[in-house]
Image (cartoon, rainbow, N blue to C red; front, top):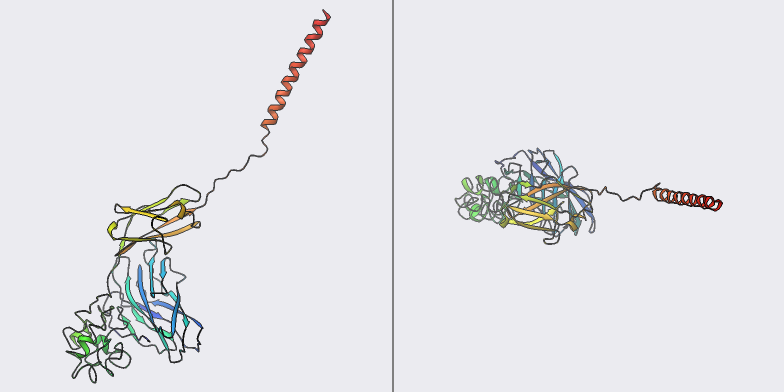
Length: 389
């Protein structure tokens, strides 16, 4: 199914930020590989993001997601779930530049002549002060007409079921009507999902609201705070329930806690040493879930141990021995956030070179021979003298 982004009014923090999925217009065939850049413009500065990639699974298959070249931090791209997240390196605090956030590489499974859309759903996008940002998402893909955009993660939002067959939208308050204006912002109601579909006069009681433009659309996955809620499918759009009761952000807008490293930040470990490396994070141990180094999840009990007080994590000597010399990023993950620190692996500079030019043994032997020879000479002279008497 091709996913069409719904339009939403952006009233939250970071409204100037725009995250755009690249659009390529070219002939592709089954078996081809296509890479799309995901870029940010008007970047207000962010410390972490978590997106879910949405695309036409009948035509494309996500092969990999890779971090942009200029961003320092812990990046994870899961091709199975489509989840893409990044925590900016602790010493950088925020990434403020415009440019490529990450790239998405797809394998082509079917003909894309009539378009295969790729868009994003926002779970987390926040700054170093833990303030949620609401970037505008502009969909892209292969041979698609760009136009739809979402704010606040309501990619499918606005009116998923609602509105109508012609008006509100078939799937997403967007395809024909009820989306660019309707579906969401004014959503699934006054204009969209109403005139013909969803309801008799304005997409209200049942149409552009209870199901359309709100409860399911524009909210379930976050077209909430902004999309399909404040105005959409609700105040203007036709109803008390629409775009609000569930809208407002059931999934779409939880914040992530950034915990502090209170001991062990910027530590170091020397190769071939017997030591370990320990950090202490001010997160509650009961919320601790796992540990990552450079974005790779470690094995508890083998690569590290963890205990309470607040949360103390110790990397094992055997695991540290597998790391290359240089800087590494340690991320301690909790069920509501994370703590992050950098540490260094330094080379073993000790040497056991054998000494050269050491002739002490030879000198000692010569001295002994000389003393012995002198003693024998003295004895010989004494015997001669005694023989003459």
